[in-house]
Image 1: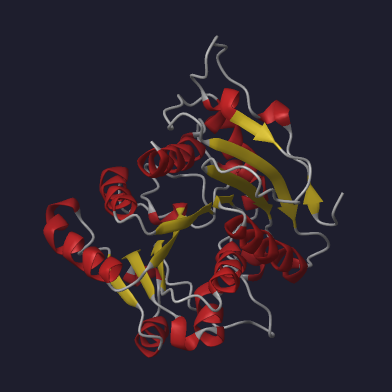
Image 2: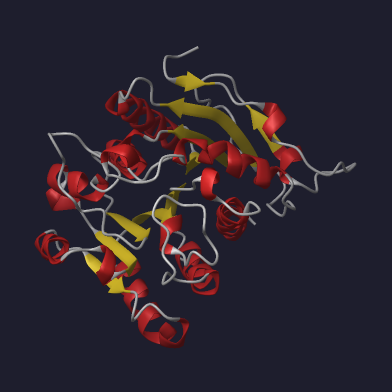
Length: 320
């Protein structure tokens, strides 16, 4: 076994039995290593978990996000399956943070994401803390190196996650700041759902300095869809490829109680799913992650189910 890598557990993928493929658990292929295969010409989805709480701990959040990947898998297994025939879904297991060595797990995630893209997979990563975004995007930038492509990062989140490192260490609040510093001329970032109460003025100044685009929660409402749509379409038109990151703490805690930083004033699924439609229809989406699920504080698996529904819906729009 590769250090920090845990093979996938087929027992997590369970659901109602059926003679044909009707549920996700029937379509999943578990792979016991990270030697990604390019031999198949069929469309492939590569699932990778991130069992990491260290970034959340460093950022002062509620511990428990490391349990997120398996909780999403359990719910996904019983979800009805509607992807196009011939689509392969491969679960490559989970990368763990051991002994607070977050940077080591990040390096392996970045390498794995780059390899997934090179071998014609659509990466789907389940977190774990939002520090995952730094490792995830680093892998995408590595894959795009030398290519005439412009990557856009869209983040659904209550927070900018543009905080600087602490003691020269990254954390769950710093991923996009780190990316802005390391890829300053290629950093194109759009954050949806920003809450003033959760972001001090210094972060708005950082957003201005990094030329980040954002929509605040007061404007991020379904009754202002025309304006939201216009801004998203403008951003999509300005880039060639899109990486989508979904931080579950951006949703209202009425829908997502099981997160590291819950908020009653977040957005609702109706608006989020309209945005997923818009992004998927652009044909530019190349990678996805869902982060900050904290099963320790979830209620009746509501947040895990939301994470699974977001993932299933986006993949159905891309591969259906």
